[in-house]
Image (cartoon, rainbow, N blue to C red):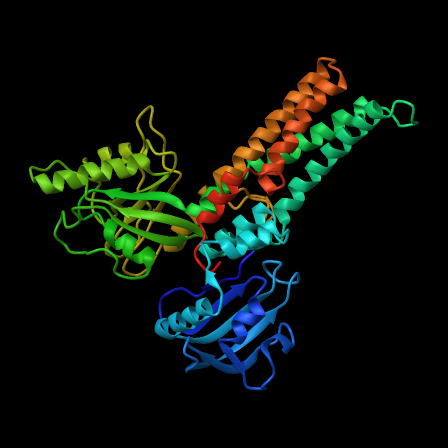
Amino acid sequence: MDTIAAIATGSAPTAIGVIRVSGPETDAVVSRVFRPKCAKPFSALEPRRLFLGALTDRMGRTLDSGMAVRFPGPASYTGEDCAELHCHGSPAAMGEILSALFAAGARQARPGEFTRRAFLNGKLELTQAEAVIDLIDAQTPAAARNAAAQLDGALGRTVGQVYDELTALASQFYAVVDYPDEDIEDLDRAKLEDTLRRADGTLTCLLDTCGRGRVLRQGVPTAIVGLPNAGKSSLLNALAGYDRAIVTSVPGTTRDTVEESVLCGGVLLRLTDTAGIRETDDAVERLGVERSRSAAQRAELVLAVADGSAPLAPENEAVFALAARCPRWVLVWSKADLAAGPQPVKSWTPPPGLSAPAAEVAVSSVTGEGLDRLENAVRALFPAGEAPAGQILTNARQSEAVSRARDAVRRALEALECGMTPDVILTDAEEAMNALGELTGRTAREDIVSDIFSRFCVGK
């Protein structure tokens, strides 16, 4: 395998930049670019310790004073000889150092190639490799904790226990068949049923986490809807913590959808502020209203905003009816700071066939009053659940593999209940093992592996 190199810290200027190298010629390649201040050869430096030295371009001219560290294989991230060069994060300087590494014998790493080599060398399972992406992309503390636990192997251990128990059953059966003269205990049907039912329970618990995993990784598509000048954009700005949308006293200011991701009650919301919903002859505003309706229809959560400082306008009925068709919606009474004295939260009774709001809260986007209650309402709608960190399925590939495994286990249970012979039952059990092997990478096809690592950035 050849030696690869890449900038690991991106192309933007940073205080510190890191360049990674991995492969059989790592020591030789880096020694042509890094001159340790201690005057020892790079290959003689103590592993896993940073050493100060000069970083040079392909002509041998000093570009920066930086540090380097060796990670001899197999005790490294990729399982190969590795090294990191730490320098100031100038894109120009790092580009020259990288070019020098190429001139010294390395080649440009492809996206995700470092982690792919870690997988191929048995340092990571496929679920752990996916956790690397999830950890890089994590936008909430909960998402980061789950990804970190998966990277530590939590999901792989849970799936591996099921896989190993099914393997033990299959091994015992084939041992009896292949060595009939040996004193090997026959496959006990009660033990077989117990193993299959425990596998079914474990896989079902994993599948129950799919919704939570999607929320952790992608966030909740959320639409803010209401009449013109109801306080929608002000609410978006209050949740975002800065003036993301234009706010004026003129109705109809928002003509198009405005999108922003915010953390609300520990839940990542992908907010879409929409044009005020009303009948209008303005062609541009009418297009914005149609986009508002489309955004609400696609959303998993709708925040229906109504002016809480004024009498309820009849036109709000259409807004509430639109929100009530969403799987979850919250009625937000805005402008609490403008209400004439303390007022109870107004209420709206939905007509037959439409759902009531999951919660009603009065807020002030100016003072922040009531935003905590809105956060509590969102948190209640998307609870963290009881699944331990690391045992939450976070993508379609994982859930599809676990679903196929559970279906196979249930077919095996049905065959057992129908009195089928063990070989018929174990055919389905082995199918479950194959699906779980795809999940962890034991039996994953090359196209699946390639697709996963194609989503990585260069340098990871």
